[in-house]
Image (cartoon, rainbow, N blue to C red; front, side):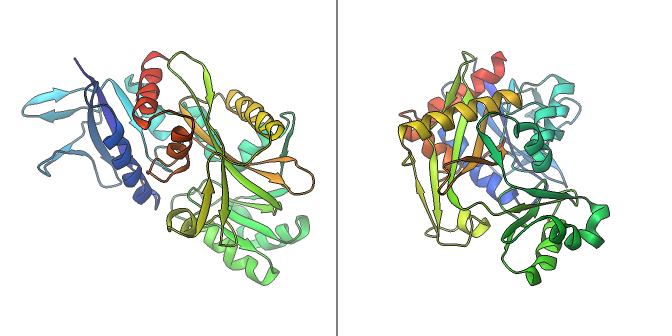
Length: 334
């Protein structure tokens, strides 16, 4: 009997558009000889499975089951591919824990922690060889005086972004103080991000993104890094999802010492944050100093054909089909 996989997509934020594209790619790659895959959409309005005829079948949220032709379908595992709320911030993971359904991502606690960029930096900053940019974490209560707090503590240029957002939505680079108020408003008002803002000083260096996962045997596997070079001022939403604006080099041109150091640090981040499944870690290597600067961790990274993780999987000599199978099997055995 095939393993029944719920491929959970959608979400409550602007990242749902990316989630649908990721889910379509994952669905196409999963081995259908081994797995029965049911794409499940989670939205603010409803949770449902849409069959090949376009008929929608509501999910019973008591046990995350669906009914097809009068038969109740229960899933063996959930493959979470929701970027942002509620698939990356721990809400969905907590629900699955309560009903006893295994899933492919980090736990509820780790997901909730890592969704908060400021809190994550506080946890990882004492890892040997890691550096973090100087920053200010702002809450809703700080909004009226946010600009003054930033002016007092940081120097230009700076990045302003939602503390619990993704896909660079609501993110701005500020090179002149006259731009700060609008950047703060954009970050505060980003949909479903909790009215928290992280402001960081700019690090001048090469930007990289690198995946890591624990396979079905429990062994940590670090994927080759990708270097990101964009024609935009920074790697914003348009640069991420508009063809031609960004050059992505996989595997990245790192010397052997840099590669070994990045792999070592990324493994330690994964362990320190108690990660599961696949995650992606973004970092800078600073010009002149060669220091490793942590940017953020993504616990449900994008999975479109051009996304970093599939690129890195292919560069490592694996196929996406084998990779997704490893993630499913690891979730079932963890």
